[in-house]
Amino acid sequence: GPSEAGRSGWDWPGSLKIWVSLGFDPDQFWRKTPREIRLILDARSAASEREHNERAWLAWHIAALSRAKVMPKIDKLMAKPKPTLQTWEQQLAIVRQLNAAFGGSVVRRQ
Image (cartoon, rainbow, N blue to C red; front, side, top):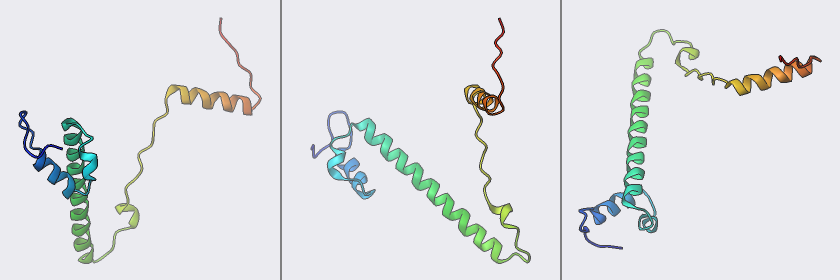
């Protein structure tokens, strides 16, 4: 691969250094376009920031809970899953299954 910055100004050596420092395979680097490299590095940066924030949140809560006189219920600390909304097609399929299970018939309007 190129050893110096190309005419476009893309810093190939610097980009490869970042790529390898993040644990990626150097051979894969040369198979990517600059756009793919940028997207992958940006995604890794976002993941690192999220992981940092998760660790900071954990450390803060450990310190805060160690000073609490009364421990809160675990349900207060747990994330609640967000319900997934059904599409109208899924709803119609369920209605048809219930109708069939209870011996109903299909009445079509004309």
